[in-house]
Amino acid sequence: MSLLDRYIVITVLRGVAIAAAVLLAVGTLLEFMGQLSDVGTAKYELPDVFAYIALRLPRLLFQLLPAATLIGALFSLGNLAVHRELVVMATSGISRLRLLRSVSIAGFILLLIMAGLGESIAPNMGAYARELRAVAMLESEEAVDGPSTWLKNGNRIVNFQREADGLGFGGVYLFELDDEQGLLQIAHADTADIDENNRWVLSNYSETLFSDSNEVQARKDQVTLMDFGLSPELLDLSVVRHDLLDTASLERYIGYLDANQLDSTQHLTAYWTRMADIVSVFLMSMLALPFVFGGLRSAGTGTRLLVGLLVGLGYYVMSQTFVNSGQVFELNPFFVAWLPSMMLLFLIMIAFFRIR
Image (tube, rainbow, N blue to C red; front, side, top):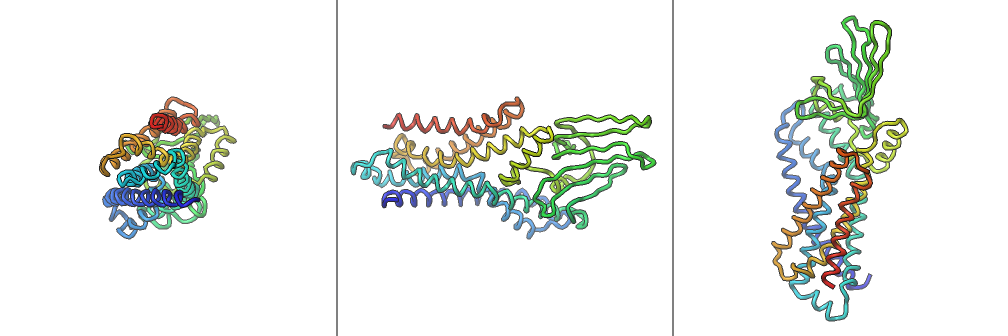
């Protein structure tokens, strides 16, 4: 890199670091306040809260880095514009495309950081945080030992499958007995969640029913609701959450679902969304430059930060809206994941065309 490249890259990265630190501080405070209501439940105390939040910091940074990139780049490049440094560069014969190359180097470095977080660091540490919280929230320590957990609730027996390290694929097996302890039903679900009515939402659900006449009935549902009366914290022992799987594990799990003719749309969408989020950091860094050369050239720091927050928040809301709409209307996962990034790229091209 030339001296100019190094100067702009360091300036942008410094601004992004400041913005990320501020957003992380706010996010951590909100996370801490959200955990306070659970303090005192079983063995979940303040030291566990601090450990849980610390382990989730990489995941929080992964979520906030695109917005922090835009805010930090606007802040840094805006200061260069206010101090007339960009004017000096322009009068020295440095084109805006040349400046874009320098900013894109900083964006590529941030992309590598984002990729490292999303590939393994953030998912694995987030999964460990989930395990730590689940263990502390449960009354019985023996309930979470080993790769499998068995619980009995009346005539229903629930088995949570886990890998030995607590980070692998899980699953829920359900066994229902009659009053004479005969087997009435066997069921399996790949993932489970709790809705607002404390009912279990089981995805990729399949069951086998045994009747008194020795008949066997089987059925499959993409999603089914059941009321078990068990602690929601037990879900954290086995739920396969795509945001807590590293990219390689997510690819393997998608392959497993496809091989068993199970619905993998949700996880495919999560996979492509993760890829698009990584690329969005690179695009956000470049978006800051036309803003600075445009109407924000003489704007104050507060205005630039407000614009960065609005654009970053708008991109996040738009991407989440497309992802959720894609699952509801069964749209192509690749399309719904990459459409916001394509729209962001189109916005960058239009903005540069207008200032040239």
